[in-house]
Length: 124
Image (cartoon, rainbow, N blue to C red; front, top):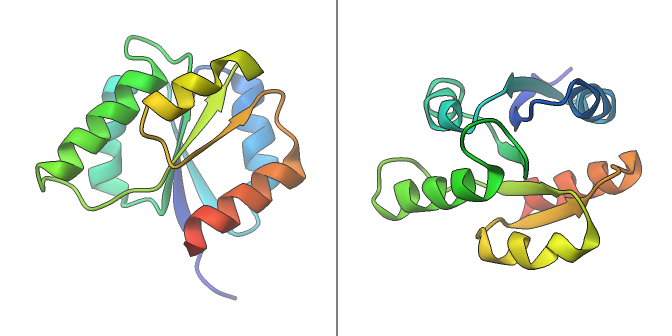
């Protein structure tokens, strides 16, 4: 059996963590942080294949966290990273575009859509 790859999830919501873990834990180890400011350090320590950011996370929102990761990538301080944003509503899609995320999903999370989106991002 192949080794599980790391997926970094930033969310304060337990139900989001549980839904994503249920959908992805067969092939991925889900590493959770509850604050946006902890994403960069955890990314460096765990080398995830994908970062999933909830739009609403403590002390540094998902959008700011995504933009910070892109800034770090452009500066050459971290490798290129795939980012999936979890949006609260359809009207937030413009935030997904502005956040420089590779893709986004509008909550509530559909497990099949999430799995497909993750596969597309990882394999692109």
